[in-house]
Length: 145
Image (tube, rainbow, N blue to C red; front, top):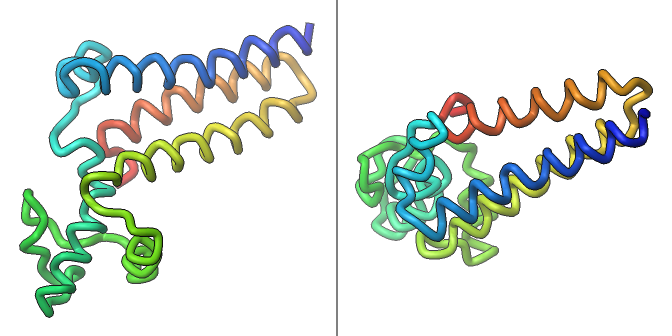
């Protein structure tokens, strides 16, 4: 039974976010998320997009951690400066920031998958999967910001 619960938990953990993201990317972003009860906004992955917008502010000679006029919503960068360096080195910009967001999501799901795979009891695996899906939904509406 443990093996079956682990497989079901892992399948759910990966398929639910996959279906949600496919739906959101292939239709209107905001209605797709709101249908699930998750508040949404544009630009997509708005929190993460402050970093490449911060790079533009840096190019203008300003400090994006203080003021970030390149951000569409006027928000300063709320990440450590190392993120600016990493995004610059990786060539992440506002047009491709979605790929980094998907990579972060996949990494997060991979880490949670390890926890589920190592669960000693069926209930633990199911609780991990359920809890992580709730956590992903919370992250979708900025609860982690």
